[in-house]
Amino acid sequence: MEEENKSAEAESEDKINECESETVDFTARIKDLEDTLERTVAESEKNLARAKDLNTMYVRLQADFDNYKKRTNEQIKKVRDEGVADVMEKILPVVDVIDNALGMINDESVAQGVKMISRELENLMSTYGVTEIKALGKPFDPELHEAILRVPAEHEDMSGNVMEVFRKGYMIGDKVLRHSVVKVAE
Image 1: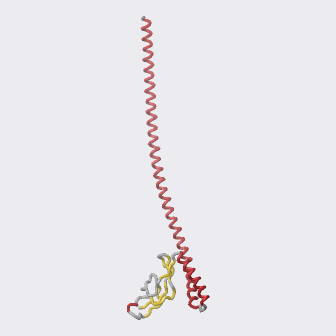
Image 2: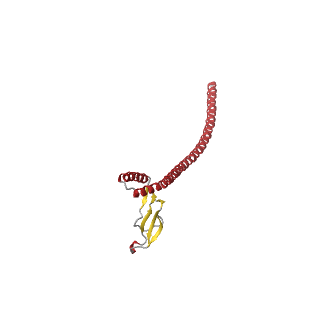
Image 3: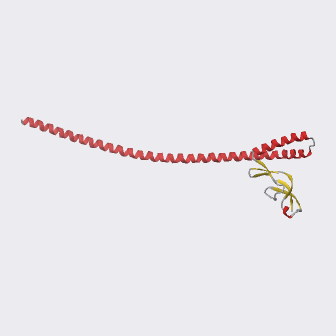
């Protein structure tokens, strides 16, 4: 029996030693897992900060690109408008010649043909926003009119008004393409 007790004690001690070694193994394993967790948390925080930085960079880049598109579109529109204005300025002398020709033509059928050409030019010009500056009978405006003659007014209420238009003026949008050349009553 004593042998059985010794054997039971030895078994008990072996189990205790085994439990202690397993406890040491678990403690070491827990310490390794805690270290791994700390590294993973630190890496996750670093990745999260990097993701936030990248998102901020993306938002700024998107805003910069939108601004670039707006600037480019504005520049394209400006260049297009300047090109249209340049071409329309070159067409105006043709319009003047046609208007003068209409005053000289005696043959009605020829006059009708020239009027058709004149209407087509007016339609073309209006398509691009070109409008005639109405001057006759209106108050003189140096922003729109160029006075080459001043004559005494026949009536006081006519003073400062345009009495005659020598050459029509035109605008494109709110920009003057050509000033009206006029005679003004004083």
